[in-house]
Image (tube, rainbow, N blue to C red; front, side):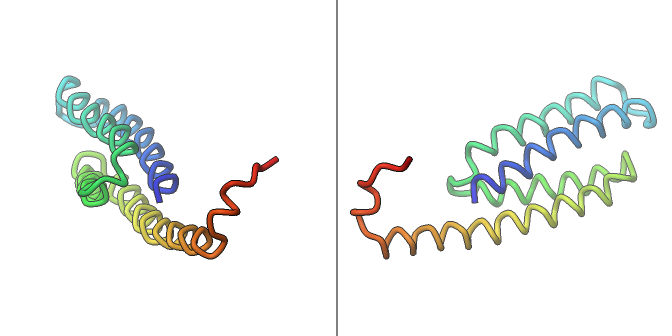
Length: 120
């Protein structure tokens, strides 16, 4: 799950940065306000990559998705992009859990002997 969710978050990092550039040019907000909000959201994306498997990590990711969609009030294209990333986030969490479960089942079936063998 970590790899899929981290990939989605890194994609969001870049989208938020580009949306900040658009918001700076098209909205009445000051550049400081735009970059403070965008910078916090971008930092949250990067930090969340490391905390995704911790308790509350997925929920914090969902909060980020809601914020991304809500940024559409400043940059209207973000309604669409936020919804797209919300779908990607759902898929990352859903299918990531399935992959983790399959890995755990495989490890339980093969036992410790498979782990001791070196891979080439």
